[in-house]
Amino acid sequence: MARDLDKVRFLKALAFEIRRKKPAAEALADCIEIEGRGGRHRLFRLASTVLASDGFVAALRAADLVGPEAAVLLEMVFAENDHRLLAGAINGLADYQDEAA
Image 1 (cartoon, rainbow, N blue to C red):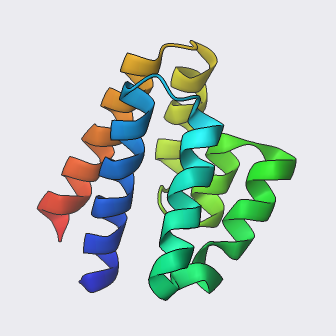
Image 2 (cartoon, one colour):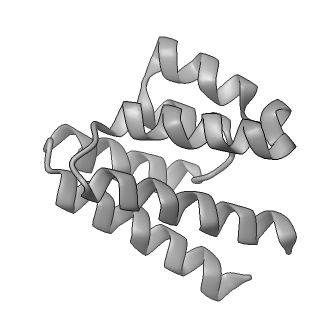
């Protein structure tokens, strides 16, 4: 359950940064860095590497923050290049995770 709450917190923080018009990849890198300072660096080391090589949604998958179905939808939303839409989608996923936890 604690892992699910960490996912919710991480996704909500990511959505907040994106809503503030920070580029998605930069916002994700910043959130990963903050998690690393909190002692959870190993969990996000792979995601950081994947972000640099394969992109935003692939990094979310590598960190086990979203499932395959959500990743497909996020790819489509990400391609629209609308920060409000992307932030809303990520926040919706966080809310779903929160209700499921």
